Length: 329
Ligand code: APR
Image (tube, rainbow, N blue to C red):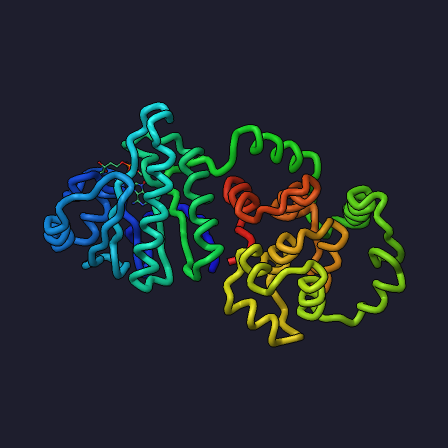
């Protein structure tokens, strides 16, 4: 199931379980711990008193009480002491043990705060990386939808160098004029695509060999997608997980040859299939879309395709950093 990142207050989320960044006593505190106890009400503390505390890296479950979430999973993150005292391993354990506990309890939706990234001082960008990598690897073998809730504006989801590199690329490519400002914009847009796919066999707007392309000209999006999944040697599950797409949505697409996906969904599959720019355009066109330099989201995805980086979680971290909607989900 998909992985989401949002900015917001975890106590407001209507999910099966929210995770609390607690301390070893489990008797409440500040930060998200304080917010969760305030929102849940006194019965949460009463139950926590019966748990006998919690080791760092471990996780324990209670009811959610007045929270919209059914359960609270309390985990205790490591205090940052410079990074050479096993902090990363303990933080990985927090996420993994919380995910295992949620899965054992039958939770289908789960939300995490950025554990240890507040009072406990874990550098936020490293905390995000640990969270994304640990959640991503768990989702390869489990069907649960996970949301990482970033409360602080300064919780960077990509490194400064990558942010700067993408920003320069956007500045170079983004066409600020509005699309309907006459032929000049359209000419620049067309010129862009001729440059961007330079050297790729492109005739009459049909990529690749003319004959092969024409044989698929009547294919629907769904038919092209399934053909490309087979051609890539992927199973359906491998493809929709790489696309950060929910199994149910994939089944809808598979079973309806005329299904029209959103642009974010079509792009997510292009990334999962590791298509080049030209093939991405071809797949998007089947869904009635095109990559465009009027959209920052498109330019960011294009940046990753041109750099050969098809990790949808990294792409989503970059989209999140630029306040764009995410792919898949
Ligand atoms: N929703 C989501 N995230 C939140 C919320 C909220 N309502 N409030 C705070 N956060 C974020 C913080 O901005 C930070 O990024 O949660 C992250 C974790 O910060 P802390 O709550 O300080 O937790 P942590 O760094 O793990 O320190 C735990 O702090 O609150 C005490 O009792 C807690 O002693 C324990 C220590």
